[in-house]
Image (cartoon, rainbow, N blue to C red; front, side, top):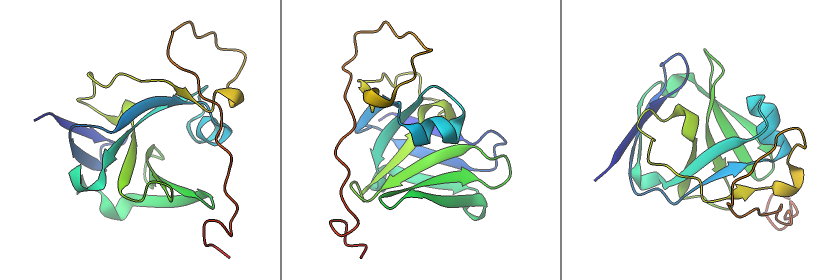
Length: 143
């Protein structure tokens, strides 16, 4: 059994994940770029039953970045660490950069490729997937 430990930048939020992970991918969406100040962010997904928050539960602040998702960040250092989506209610999505033991996490592709920035040249052979059609608020049951 592989265990992945991780934390925010200041170390106040600590988590532990029991592998396997569901997926790992580079996200190029506009919101991820803005939230992280980067050309793209690499995430991995894990079943919530395999996720444990070890410290910092009172420091996590959740920001609803869209009607379909929210991002969890450290209220002290500002690191965005978690992502939860209505489309995957039983999954916790976590930044690979926050994982201390994530050296074996290999991205399987690029998502939201149609939103990628032109100023970074990527020469890997990973699949490039475009944005999925966005459901309406009524389809999500929010109205």
